[in-house]
Length: 382
Image 1 (cartoon, rainbow, N blue to C red):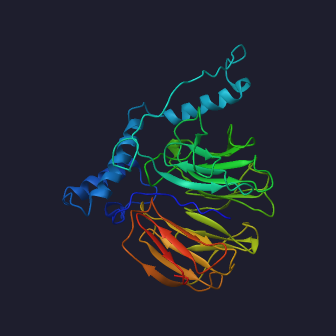
Image 2 (cartoon, rainbow, N blue to C red):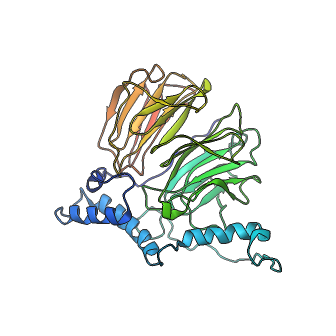
Image 3 (cartoon, one colour):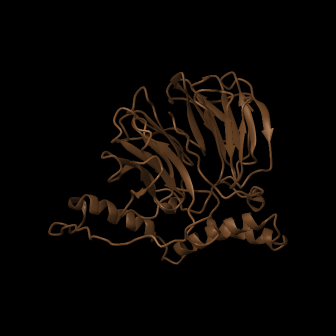
């Protein structure tokens, strides 16, 4: 039986970040802070704004740590450099006579446990992937706490990014022909988990990781979002980033930029992986394996700002069905592979752009799920 895993977020009602609407998508943290405090000096902290206020204050708490370091010094970059040298000491400067040792630890988690609260120690999961050959093996990525693995269908978990700096793991991809080959895209633009260090690859089932040539410094303020493997050709990989769509034809060894711009999501047409869809300021499509792209006439269009986001969902149950959800929690549907679109749902359920998702059952194109502070389900195609 196929298992369904959903990401869990704190339920509640929140409006998308009003203070950020006039900010460009790549706004610096200083610009974000100025806009936030200018907005909230005129807005009382009532129940309508508390969640949004708390969200930014959490982000501020993390980002201010980076501001304490001298210009050009980024602690996560230095930690990642040390981690990669530890994995391969021969490339480390001065490592000729050094050995790497792993100390045995005797630590046990001490809490907090029980229901989620707003206390320090809460976590936030932003990606999940089930092993294509074993439903009991589940991987999750957190907003700022790395990669975790369960071999018991979610009953217990093991931390899989020991030695690496705190990472936002935006998405996880597993080679269906060889599950030892895995990829993670890093960064968490929306939740305060930090910017991307690029795409990482493991060839031993997630035990150790190496940075691919699609790499960033956190000071570049980029973010990697969706990562896709072509099941018909696992050497072909796509990554949607705030830097554009990158494609590798050799299992991540080298990458080429096939579409510039801010890209939030990317999906295959389930009947033909040469056809892809991508969400940005509109919906774009490629019919030649990602080589060239064009916008779809009649698709929803957006003016991008710092709080912008849109997600796509496709299904093997009907390759012509595509769903789109934006950060205002409007849901659009196309039943003709993107030729025309209908707004089928609008709600103020949202918890902001950083906690939202949409999915379609692979067996029933009329069974739709959306979430973002509350869960909704449709059994009549929206």
